[in-house]
Figure 1 (cartoon, rainbow, N blue to C red):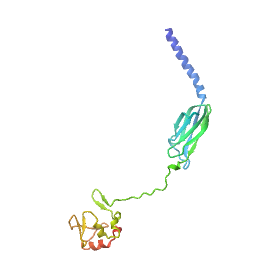
Figure 2 (figure 1 turned 120 degrees about the vertical axis):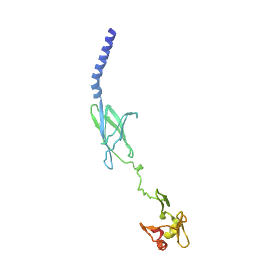
Figure 3 (figure 1 turned 90 degrees about the vertical axis):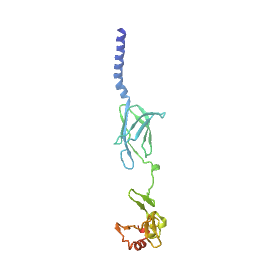
Figure 4 (figure 1 turned 30 degrees about the horizontal axis):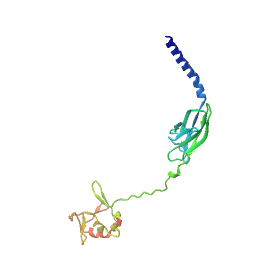
Length: 206
């Protein structure tokens, strides 16, 4: 029983000492807070990293900004630190001798500059189609992509299409069948005049 009582007394003393020491420890620390934005647009930067480094280069504390670009690092031991702020696509910011005072808020707001090394100039995107395309319900022949059709007529260009043949008289056949229907701009061409019409239309007009 005496041993148990002595153990309880030590536990109570430790708890009381911790409670009394807490205000002292808080009084010997401070806070660093601020806002991180982009210098070119003044837009708040979410998830920017704020890192505090001791004199020996070791990380003391770190925090990330919220959606408003704000950050707050609490319970920092009194002293001077180097603060580094980084965000993807922006130049890293570094500031030495940022001093924390006991019980005070030290404010540090920074506008990061875009990293010009990551900027690219104007980009031109050109779509290039293949000569032949296989769609679900049809096959497409892109005349503009066929260099052999330059200066040719539509009738001559048809001779380049697989499964399509054009004889010396201009008769069109597909897989050996002469029953071929020609449509231009959604309208059927009469079989009697299709050779003359296709011979007059330049291939590059399609």
